[in-house]
Length: 494
Ligand code: NAD
Image 1: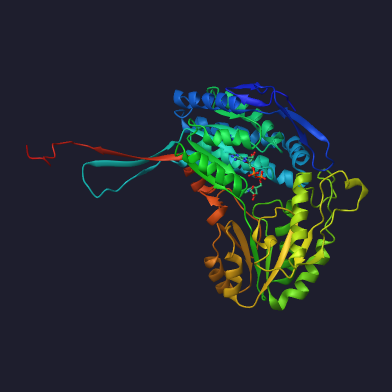
Image 2 (image 1 turned 45 degrees about the vertical axis):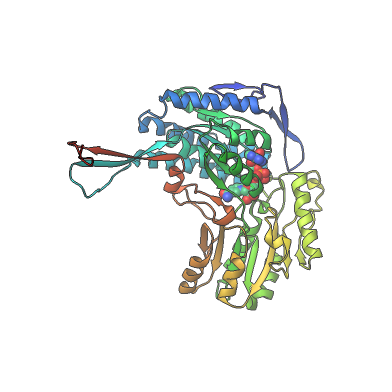
């Protein structure tokens, strides 16, 4: 990986102050790469480049077809480099190669979706009910966008932001997680080529690297017009506060504590199967992970028994090993945090039904692995049920009535996603309507498509990514009123 890994005003640079950071492979703690570590001076330079590129008007004024060709070119380049990028994502995040391949394909789909959507987005004519008036709503880019992303889905999360931001004609400064910047750097190489070939000015897309200090500098910067942040609730609140100083537009995609409700009439085998995927995909490091299993009491014993039987069979291993079904946690510190949640849950009365330990396999000792963990006998008063653990930890609660299930599901400060399992259609519709969540799956878990909005209620965030709303986040709405044959109005008589 290149040491000159900041992209500012069209040129690859090292950090001004010479800073660097080692990127650690979570599967064996080896150094995967060393990249530049920016500081506030680099952020200033990147924002200045983005501002100049926006003010020039060449990019935002480019015909939409020409601008969206850049997104299409990125989609083609991602597919052409799919193997290399998936390997890089796995090395960086510790997730399995199959998951990284999905991420490259899903990212590709996002560029294609916004390329197509922007091409149709011509605004609208308003029916004013008055003669002699032409009234139109047009959508314009917001300006300079600061894009900040987390470590769990690096390529995908940044793509959810870059694609609509550029489709709308904005310029941008991106800052990926300091733990997993590698595929974002690779993406910017592809993006920079696509922009140059389209004749875009330098400075349309800039990349800075570093941690919270760099992110905070971007969020507070007076020349950033919009900040779109995906990450934890605490950092998101800081971003919102920083953005308030200049009344920036803010979009926040934060954490979740997502309920997975199973009624007694659900298809047993399918519900168990998806309860595993919901909780243990990417070792539970998924914002929408179904980490709270809410079971009808009559199902409790057989369901948990089957869940535990299958959880114990999950093959935890190195991401590049084709046999692995789930990979590592992102860092030693994060694994320790997850282990503290498990210990705390046991101290508060939870029953450990499986996991709670590091795998014994000799090959995995250097990496940050943890076995899938099922905690039974949980209740809403426990810290492990209330806080986002972001690891392979599933809590089990039980209910008797439909109202009780909804109450348990909604009893959280978060509201990102969740599922309901039942063969009773009326009940499914009722419960889906009562859940205070941005996404509800009925008899499924985790699917999403670029055409449908994604985002949270309550402290899971504000604003939406994906879908038409995902493009609107990056647009100002302007009303243009034109009187066709103007005459004096004589409101004042003099
Ligand atoms: P994090 O909040 O620690 O970091 C996220 C990003 O923000 C990183 O780039 C980090 O460097 C930066 N950052 C940290 N402090 C900042 C500050 N004060 N100002 C500006 N930037 C700052 O989160 P993480 O640990 O990287 O990611 C995990 C979290 O992300 C989880 O809570 C997860 O639920 C959430 N997440 C949400 C979604 C969603 O769609 N809602 C998707 C993925 C992850």
